[in-house]
Image (cartoon, rainbow, N blue to C red; front, side, top):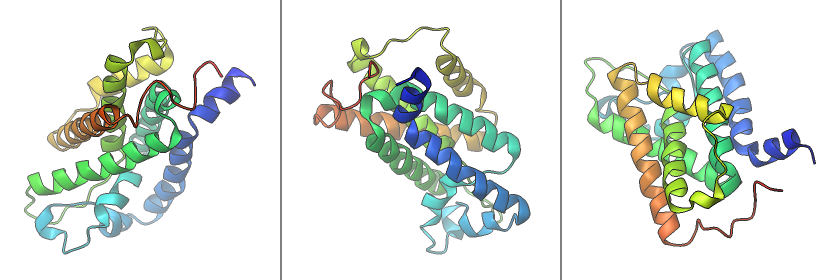
Length: 200
């Protein structure tokens, strides 16, 4: 098995998520009202439509938004997926990304209903998960600072907090990623005896 094929197999969840993002983005370009149907918002305007906390993590505003989120998702996935496995990667992205949207809805206050979305909460959750796993199992990771995925993830982590909304969503996602992964490590759900090894 070639290195590219092996990498793609290990990172299939994040690659599949990007494939899901693209048609949804095309639909939002054709009809921006999709945000009014699927985007998350201030709790007072949510009107019982709690599904928005989940759907919001799959939609994006612009070409730059989807491009950089997709790039960061694949880069972060390549750092963590080989260790925790496909299903745990998906679980952390979806659950923590959704929790980040819930926390954001509770904290923010809008004068008007403003619908938002983006996968960055889930991406930051995976970054938090990587941090926990790297600190707990450092020998399982063969990291060099000049690896492209490390550079992309680091630059994304530093540069994308360009407004208060982004900062809050990212902070919530990162915090939930740390908490959930810590629980999974302490309970033995994540350990050295994972199924997929980077050497395969």
